Image (cartoon, rainbow, N blue to C red; front, side, top):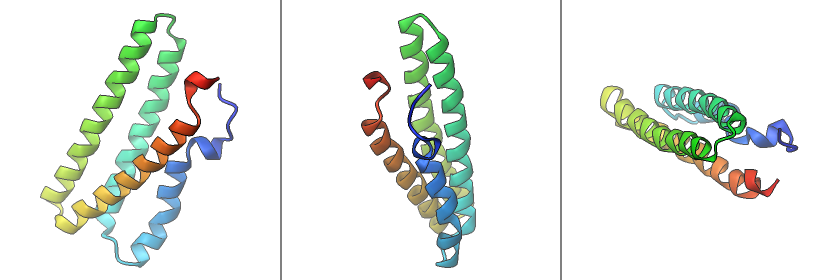
Length: 120
């Protein structure tokens, strides 16, 4: 279990949720924002489950495989979400989805660099 505050661990999700009303008020397409936010949060929840499963495993190879598989799968899934939103909903919605995912990914990446699991 980590010693960081829960808010800090999930700052990316908090920012996505708190930014939604502001983004929608300034005219960001709702469908693009909503679909990307939902995909991000679903994949973050899956990531928590994967991390727990990897942490519970005593086999180092299994831990690495689970984490690497999740990371690659998540990148593929998020790219697919952006492509499908742009293709099915529209160009502006695709750009909104891209913006949401890039912002959330950047926040999570920065936090993971500061709060490394291996540093504990």
